[in-house]
Length: 372
Image 1 (tube, rainbow, N blue to C red):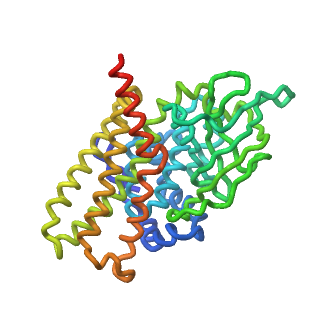
Image 2: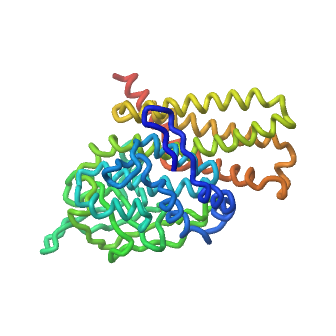
């Protein structure tokens, strides 16, 4: 994996073997779970999970911007693989930002090597942070010699719940009034039940399922943070920034295709395509600057607006690709990549936090500022 210097704009070049595999199997990953087990090992084999992870901890160095660009590079070929990448790499970020050294020592190396799937599980928590949703899992302290906590509840939608084994993060509320915490639970823990894969209309190779926890025991070594309210805002820029990598890559792919088409058959659209490419580059630059200087940790609104803007650019990009193709886009033997990107683009506005949720939060912030 080639990573640009940390002071420059990021540029990730995928290893040829991985790029070819993604190009060959992008449709299958989108429409079938048959290859779901291969995604994490192939991304790990290419060294992608180490993007933005300190070299001293086994990564390839850089910072979150490198992870964003690596996810974007994968999303140009397959949003399904990028979705898995985001979930796994976001969990790695939780381990990196956790004050729990034991957690880091136990799980970071297996996660970087793809030996176990990492699942972010904190979409519910991010909505909780914005007052949109209550926490879905309760932690009850155990008085036995084991100590620790009992987990009960569930999450309706988590990606990268690998059937071969996973570790997932979740925010939990205390049965005794302690502050909400963020914990990690494993697929092999007694009482953890994974549902069948959700019946998605696309991204079916992403190991996306629901999970139910019934009396799952965790200990202190499984606690990511004891204070979710203080910790979540600090990790949110990485969570959302890497999530935006999916939009960036998909928009680049559609705009690249549209540009090639317009230079041949629809030259009248070329100016619009190039204008949107410039708009995308500006948004990416703003994302890089915000995650690098830390401004998004104290001011979430600009980050929310960037997520909304990038989602809008994706919708415009696939529309320009459609217009550049014309009626040929409806021919199955013309370019199956367009049909897949059209389905992939439908997912961008609804991945949690959805555009509707972000817009609601921005309205709340604006109303609060107006009342102050």
